[in-house]
Image 1 (cartoon, rainbow, N blue to C red):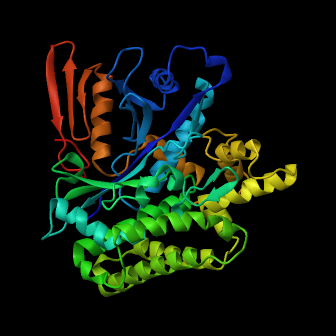
Image 2: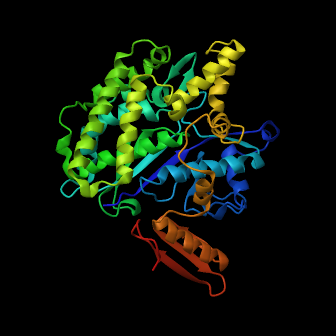
Image 3: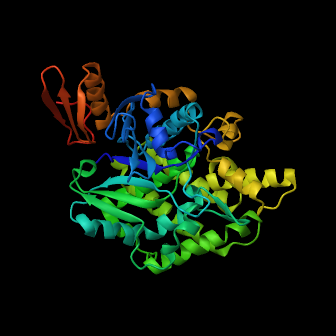
Amino acid sequence: MKRICGLETEHGTVFEEELIKLNLTPESYLMRELRDDPTFLLSEGGSEDEPKRSHWHNGAQIYLDCDKHYEVATPECTPDNISLYDAALSKSICEISPHHHALVYKNSIDDRLKTFGCHENYRVHHPLVHGKELEQLIFQKLGAFFVTRILFSGAGHLYEGKYYMSQQALGNAHLATTRTPSFYTSRLNEPFSEKGIRFHYTGGEANLSEIANYLKIGTTSLLLTLIESDASFFKDISNNADTCAKLWMELNQETNLFVKQEKTPIIEKAIEIQKYYQSCAQTFFDQNLHLKDAWTDDILVRWKNVLQQIKTRSPIIKRQVDWAIKHALIKSYAQQEQLELSDKRIEKASRHYHLLRPEGAYYVLRKAELVDTLFTAEELSSAQYNPPNTRAKARTEILRKMAKQHAVPQIIAWDRLRFLNPETNRSIEYLLPDPLALHFP
């Protein structure tokens, strides 16, 4: 089954100094200003001055989640293109935000250790196991994978002079105390998961590195295919919740030793766990060639390579993995300015890595070709305006058609759209139950 997946990323927003006196939250101000931006196709909900949700031309959405922060959701994607669309959305915000006096950060934690979410969604279908049982099976088999995946998906965090691989390390202290993991849920019988469940992983963090994002989604998707086909592949590893929680905390605590070139037995253990999962996936797909394609091979090779690069502390990871890129950046700045990592100026530089503006540190590095990328400027620009070949394409066609007719939106959901024709005063409704459907009925 072709897998549908998506990302929902909460962003941090603050005002530029001249707008601090406005009687609006940064999120509300940004949503209001985005209403008429040409990169958006349609805004709806809320009030005329402050819409609750806006729709991009590529099928993505931006909205105020729980009226507290703004969240960007990719269109319905497949694992081979989701990192492209996520990068394109970041590019859109990077181009928009300077014109609207708001500083937007694609990170997962603020100065008060309040974490933002970067939630991953995967449609998972098993012929025999359903609902909550399927959700539990996933964690029973992949708990250690998710915990150690931060080796290449961690976004890095500097706090009080200590550096952590994951931005969730301090904000998610509950991982060390709970027996029931609270960083995943599942949704049944909903638009995203017409068959099976939507596996909703909430323990991830936002990536700017295109390669890290690509690996994060790709490796997870491959292992979910094993769960759907033959979960017996995973036999020789403990996924006990307490064991995983302890490993999570120790892995982050050991990051400082790693960047200082000291011995790191916990990181070595995490690498071996990831190697085990990579080996399981490699064996499975070698035995099931009908499920294998060029993208599968690319993920398997990159996965194996990045683990070896981390193990040998190769300088390549400073071009491909967010936490390593950021650490190299702030270390260089600290040495240049003769500052300790505990200095507030270094913490500010660390946060600047995530700024979605042309002057944001990541984008400066990208422009200077100091980080490795996957996508050309032309590919990113195309993905800003053109939806993937999923239901997002059909939904966008409907929205464009209704916009030309000046129809009034009444309901715009992922799988259902209803508009009021102002001339006839009658409603027209479109139902899109299949997330892989390219055209509307």
